Length: 316
Length: 316
Image 1 (cartoon, rainbow over the protein chains, first blue to last red):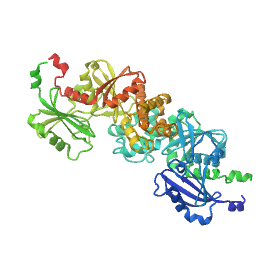
Image 2: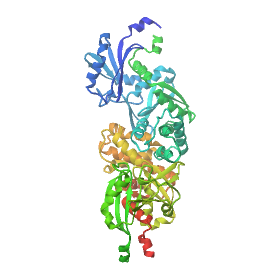
Image 3: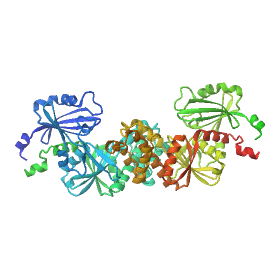
Image 4: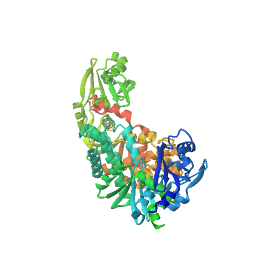
């Protein structure tokens, strides 16, 4: 690899600015020179512009040529609204729909979110996941050909289909939010302890119950989180794992119904969470390819910034 | 009706003591002489005994001969635990399993809750609803013969089957709790306004979406509460009605799957809530017989206290 070319690569700022967290990176080509964390757009104490400029102040002397941001920063309640692009969409459509402006002389671009009519016939939206998805494709060029099913587990889990390198449809299931609401505020969780990831036994039992009772049963199974503690000897330490197994099992069963059975699902996200989804998929005989969410968003911002990726670089 | 016999009927205290509220009644036969409200067992500031004795102090001079209580007051965290009786069970089994003790010289009995293995094969429990159910049967003696499906909508909606006057099985769906959690704490409800009962249009759309997307779709449909506001022009004032339609529609569809299609469902509860369930049932071509929940619990306590009901009275 021509090292000199890398050294000449422009210095840029990349940012993943969601509702609850901002992660900023100073990059040169594929190298991360520095990183800083800041508040999410739902937790700002100053304007987005002031917050951003304050955080990048130490980087200005490195003369970054531009900044590229993705996530809720482009929502109506973010910094500058980047209206949704429609599916099907690939990196070219996202680049064409970026919102561009200047902040204290620095060119800033925000990646638009995507909208679609989901497989249930409902309107659906995402912001930030588009960058992770195209990052995963940049990291794994074999995913650029053919049809692939991806899942991005989180507060609002997204299931997505890419065909020949373009995102064609997706579906949101607010599974992480449901889990947190039930864990933190419900009578079902009362007296329960432990977390979903630690209790493998509870998680396995939740998956099993979901599979036994069938796909329509979610509201009716939830109460077992409590009744099994009262009557059935479910240890309190396993209760949150059980709840997580019910919810993730229902999400995976639903996705199989909407998208058809896939032999493999690409999982992008926090490793603890993609591991739970991999277990739920394995229980249905489906393989998983887990990818780290932070690495995917960085790869996506790099790909969308049109900088030479490893792959394109080799052709240059 | 022999009025003298009614005047000679013993004076008793009846109480419906749930998690969030206590309702006490001073009764003579079928007449309610007085009523008082107090804190639920989840909101006590003194012991259950002290709370109870303080509330009934003004009634002691009327020389009530006993008190009969139902609800969470008989749970592990209530006053005195009344262990669950098992289904199938009728009024005789409940009477036989009442916990009896004295409070400051007054005989007190607590109605036990019921446990069962529900139609999904899971352990299930209820407390308080057994009294409403047998109250409904006392109010409508035609329900004492044959098989009937009942629903008691609330924080934890109960579906129950009575056969020849006995409760044979039931199933809990924490639909009211899910609705409240999503309304009060979720990002789905953010910026939404209105309540479920006021927004008939939102509720009807939620029912329709649930019916279109099928029974496995609940976690995947929930996000439409938000996305339809963003993209589809769903008025914010209709969003909570929409959410309620999704949840109640899924509950009713699930119940049809577990209990079989019934021509009629007896609905016991708060009229505003039984009205929503009646609409969801009507959309599936099922009739509803709505009964007021407070009247049902009073009729049930009277029936379980072995006092002559109207029906038995006529035979005497």
